[in-house]
Image (cartoon, rainbow, N blue to C red; front, side, top):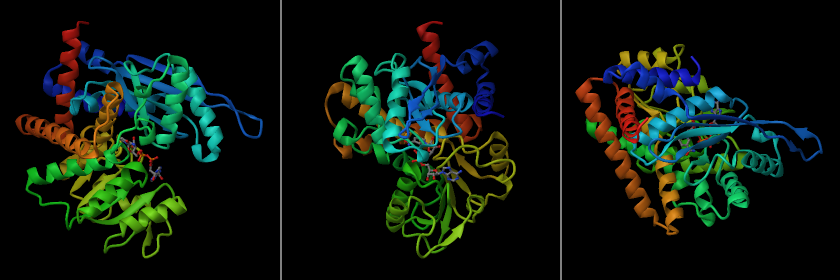
Length: 410
Ligand code: NAD
């Protein structure tokens, strides 16, 4: 299945529980707009670099569309379609006044100089500035994009439309970004886990063991919050490989090592571990926090964790999802678990529009409230309808998007 088909598989599973008609299903699945643009720039050596950029706007019935920008060689229209539709369901699960979008550029940013990266970003904005905007579509960071990239986006967009900090979130705090945004996805994922553990009577983070795939924004912050709470992070991996220490990795020291070495590999006091081995390690909680499609039919039977905390987007293929469910593994779904990022992005946007700033305590308290309320609703639906958390999350989201669509009038 393609990425978009995978999301629609989960959508249809929930739609069946809700008795949605085929026409309504088709209408809710169909994206509002798909855009593919040329992002050619002059490289530092004077040659022409040609790249393709994408922005898919999936649904706008509940507000401006919202979703990240990914810079990665695998970015294509299908990936953007899948991730954009996930954003529609995610913003609805946490009840934010947004629709869903996603995009990016098919490029390996590690091969670009900082100036080239800036030119590519500005060129992309030049190509899409007329379809994004504070009340239309608001990008944010995703894989291989960060606060600096968001700052360039804000600056370039403002050249066309006047000063517009609210056109993009995840900006540097010195440039109208929000306190707590950088940490928000990792923090939200840990809040999500705490909600589930409390409800399931499964204890707390303290003393539990964790394997985390991905040590970028989401994975590294999740590790820090788990470590702070007494969780034992026993293995971590990134695109170059992984490290393991059964006694628990020293997370603050690992963060420092990864900052300097640009990889977790080679961390003193640890043994190497492959990404494949990390996914099937004997731990309490597995945290995929890198790319999608890592838990598959091939490895789902071997997963030994009892809880999968989906910090990444779409880490579990539908076949793996069924296999994990059959084995009683609690899969806490991406559209709730990693919604902390878009939730604090919403706070950032609201602050920009009001030209007012919130203190970090307020941001974190509101983030917890959103994660908690979302869990209360989806856990109730899961119990009432006897469905998985993922199907319950889709039922909640489809209900909200569907009602908004119908009320606005087709
Ligand atoms: P990032 O670029 O900061 O980090 C990505 C990490 O994944 C890096 O450590 C990288 O080395 C690792 N990685 C890449 N390819 C890998 C591979 N093949 N095997 C193992 N590791 C690999 O990106 P991020 O923002 O942390 O995003 C991670 C995931 O979380 C993505 O699925 C993204 O869509 C999702 N997400 C991010 C946010 C956010 O706020 N940044 C919000 C919601 C969801």
